[in-house]
Image (cartoon, rainbow over all chains, first blue to last red; front, side):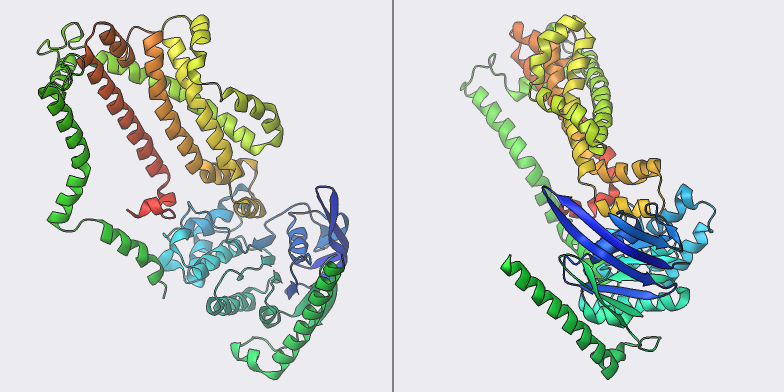
Length: 263
Length: 288
């Protein structure tokens, strides 16, 4: 459950009179229980790709299949974690986590009280269950948001720069938190980031994308052992991978800016 | 590490809340100083003959007339003695009836426009033009349509309450964080759940801002309507006393309207605070 196949997908947006090609003939396969990260300069269509898998957008051409089925809009099988934490400010942490399971579509899926309790324990938010999102720190808020998505037990987690708004210390703690969750639950994860370290540290596969039009430039296998440890970041294999990805992203970014200078 | 994030707000309000007796006295003084000064100045002006007592009666006269208006005990208000409760009730009733239908329709139409571009094209241009007509300009037509009585008053008040509520409700929907909407859809929320559990609560602060404006306008319009269209209510009392050259009653009626308007506003704020306890946490206004 959670196999994603993207076949020759093109996505165009109309902005006023002009047509923007956000994605141009993109193909990508994400295996079940795999962590795939998408990196690239802004405008490379990595968030668009995520939105297509989530079902918020439909492709102009091509197909997006999840477990062999074409996508009909967003659904609880693909949990999305947004950069801007999607917590309801009028609900307590506990009620936010319970929100998904309280919807009609998810009735009877699981014992709500039990799931919420487990999520509160797992995310270390049990003592903050009655707090409202505004009363939490950025890291706690994002943990609550992840808990509220995990509560509906999606087979795939789609994450759009989930830690982008956090300070670097909190970010690295959250990365380890995500990996722990993944070790336990083994969901398919597609994560968009502009942080190359993050992209490699988390991934089985890092996809580097280029902008104007958005294309996949290279797919890099990250053969670092799991479970990942923070110290790996300063070891040779990680550094080699990071240099390689940085090289590609930089070359593409420079090419892109040269191109826009000509235009 | 986890606790420190929430203590800042608590500390701030601890600083603001008066702790010592002299601090409380100073706060009370801040509240009292201006109204007391105004009343005193007004009384003095009258005592030294700076203004004529029958033209601009001093607060002491107004107070005693007001007392008789309410109780009918001293006959200081003469023909108006003991009529206050009837007039206050008549005005309040009209305000809440007009306010009720205006706000209900305003929220409904406002949400409709906010939720649907098609509905916006259908209704919004008309509303934008009509809202620029002062509600007082509707007085002649409403008298022609509804005749003398409660109906034109309730119509005018409702009309006045409708516009701010509708416009703020639309705004409330438009400023909803799209991420919340997407998150709810992703989790499987149906249309009804999106409306009742995401859109309505998210738009509520803005809707209630409109409702509060509507309440203010309602008290303005009830006076206009009662001067022109009915023979009861505080607006009628005010106008009638003016015709009989009872400026003390006029001022007592004015202050009564101010007081009831103030209390109605407090009522709206009370309802808002009950519904929006969560919203206070995020705003500067919630800290003290």
